[in-house]
Length: 392
Image (cartoon, rainbow, N blue to C red; front, side):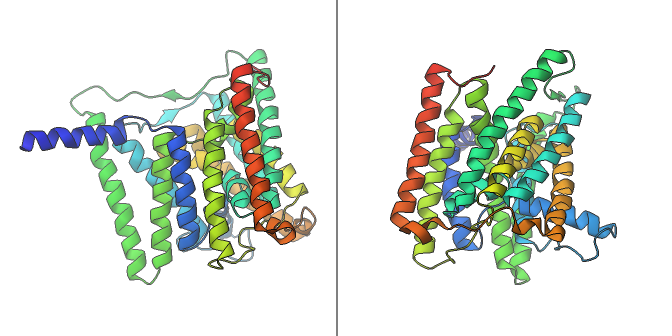
């Protein structure tokens, strides 16, 4: 009996952590988690937490006159930290964690790409998650402007990479994974046990938050870990969704993003329409200039760095050194440029807050977003067959 149970457990474990999940499954789960996170406390976001980390660094160094938000008690910070934590635990349970070094040029591209993402996210009011995914889900016109910008930026970023490959073929390359050390200690066998401890520590930390009357923060930590787990297992990547149609013609990730957004939009509509959350929640005041320009700059940065906002965090959880460098510059530049926009007043000149249902009603706003998502779904599918937009 014990042998049968052990075999069944192994089969179940392999199904979850040995086999990679499909991007479409990732899109569905992310859409569901996005709705539940919004219903629990706030929408899913990434850049807000990363910016809080940058603010904390500069405040600690005495470079900011006013103290920033405490990363330990900031809702956005907790979500971003939870995503890294969940991705780390998932990578360990899947035996996929390793400190992955990168060539010198790739490290530089990590810093440069992260800086571009910091500027772009500041302009758009969020990264690919808050500025695009959650913004569109919240019926914000700014999200659509950023979607256009991300497509343009991804194309421009790929044109740069093509130029780089032509000019510096010997210096360009991806991350180099370090293998496990030979000897008695088998790191691959040990990883899953550490992964269990990581998730147990996360759950215990969420419990401590709830014991100290911070139930919402504890829940957000668990949501962040769930996002990290799903994204790592499915390798759900917004960079691929906007880059691959131009690079390889592949439309798998683009279709997954479209389906995920549709699920999220339906959930957000029901929550807002029934008055459970304010209608202007997460409606960015970045339409149209901030969303479009921010999307272009962010799109270039995410292609050069090799990871978007959420993609940077889950790859950090897997041990990618290049993305660790991108995260550092993303946080610092995001903090500095956000401060610049606020202190100069430019923040008030780069866009308006446009809640689509306010001008056309929920039905027509939903049909507009549905048409955009269907068009994108069909476009990447058609391009997959024809390669009309590929530049490589």
